[in-house]
Length: 325
Image 1 (cartoon, rainbow, N blue to C red):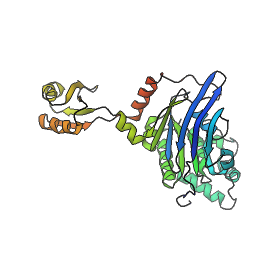
Image 2: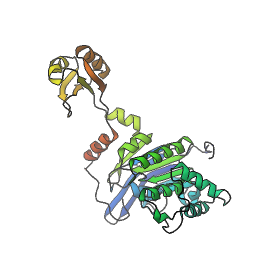
Image 3: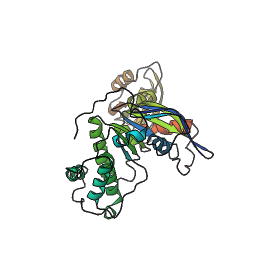
Image 4: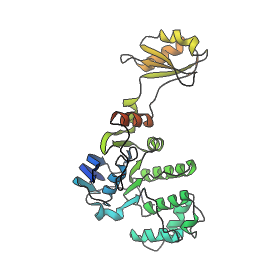
């Protein structure tokens, strides 16, 4: 593998300024502003039909924007194609080709020398836990295995920018974990990674920054840490040893508590804290007032934020039209 990448320019790897794209009567992307810094791992999130894949196809120059400015690695994506690795949402292999032959072919297309290429392919197959399939035909592999082969094809040439469109879709938990670990390794090497997904758990685990779009518009652009801090409820969760009913009066007497609500599990109480009170101080007072099994500040998940913001901004995205996912 190459050493950590250094860049001669501070210009972001991807820049979109007021980019718009329409398909007939459907405005797939509208006035989208987006930057992906070099070496960053950024997630593009949104429901089906939100415009994620349209944005990615424009970044890859598979389709052209109607208006706005778009730059990739300092210029047009077509000029930097050998420095970009792309895993499209639409999966596809030359099904009758053997796996090794297929990956060697992709490597040659990206300018890799033939010498040592077979060994590089074998090494990647081992790394992503596909040993022994070098001579297998692509059509003989399961869908999950085929997807991992396509992933290798996207990163085999060690690109500066890796663009992944729904990379975890259809993978079982074991293979998803393998792919997540590999993406993290590539990021640690300094690769710029831009991925589109509607799977919030993977995005929360992987991405240092997330961009959420709905109906073609950007409605959130922030670091993952800032998102959880911004949207986390002012609440403390506590599981009293004596049960919620016995502990309720003592909990309600704590200064700064607006209400005490029973959680769905029937064992945990949620203490809503007013804006003038520090939740950590409430935790200390609650521990002193009520013996408990567990107490912690409630945390919001990226999935919670996703549902809340999409609902606030007009609900679920439109049904996608052909080419405008």
